[in-house]
Image 1 (spheres, rainbow, N blue to C red):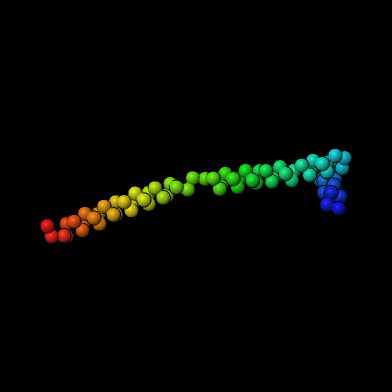
Image 2 (cartoon, rainbow, N blue to C red; image 1 turned 135 degrees about the vertical axis):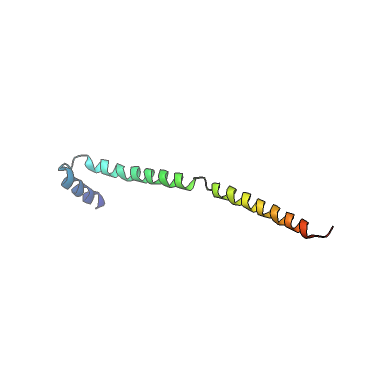
Length: 75
C-alpha cells in the first residue's frame, strides 16, 4: 500500500514509475543516516568550556575568602 503511494507520488513528480520506487525506498535510510550523523555530532560536542571558566572563578573566589578570613583572625 505504501509502496503504491510512493510510486504514485514519484510518478507525479518525475513522470516515470519504473525503478523509481526502489530509489525512493533507498532515500529513507539515507535521510535516517544523515539525521543520525547530525544528532551524533550534536550529542558529542564539547560542553566543558564553560565549566573550566566557572571553576577558575570559583577557585579565585575561594582564595579571596581564605585571604580575607586570614586577615581578620587575630594572630
